[in-house]
Image 1 (cartoon, rainbow, N blue to C red):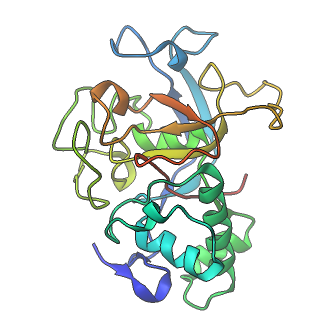
Image 2: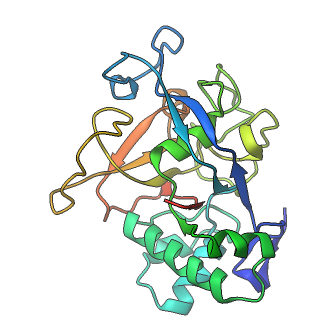
Length: 261
């Protein structure tokens, strides 16, 4: 794995680390008859388990955002980051970042990719066609994590310590846990650090007809994937966490998406 120092320390890949997730349906939520570890807030109200969700195509980062990537943003913009978020090694997932920190980084990178000659043509075309760099929604994140088969974990239905970093003493460099079975070639979709999404937390996993929440209230934002401190139950693909947008913790980070929402 190589990162480009000349391109905001993004991965040296054709799309700078962004991977396409094709359009189509997937099963979201948990079927308690299949997943004995499911929490109630993973079950759909209408079905008591999973439901099919159809999404347009989108892109998502192969890796969690790293310390080096976030540092490039913080140094250029003089963003008031928590000093501890920049203290870990450069190739580790950035942590101790709030939801607003993550959104600010996404907006900054979107601007840089639009204006830079370093942006790959295919990526530039996406942005010129109406897509933007942002956090993934909860539904996008879950489809990316489990694919279309409704797996319990990103790699299958049983926990595997060789596929993710959980119940450990700290975060690992991004991409350390190889996962050939994981959908779309994504890594660290389970464990390492919790990942912020663009979705306000609700009791159920998804409700396309729900009224938007009043964000002036004490809204929580959904986090997905679990972290290095969590047990196997909390690194399943459907597990849902929520946190105040201003909170910063050593086990909370994020990855980016590109979407036409």
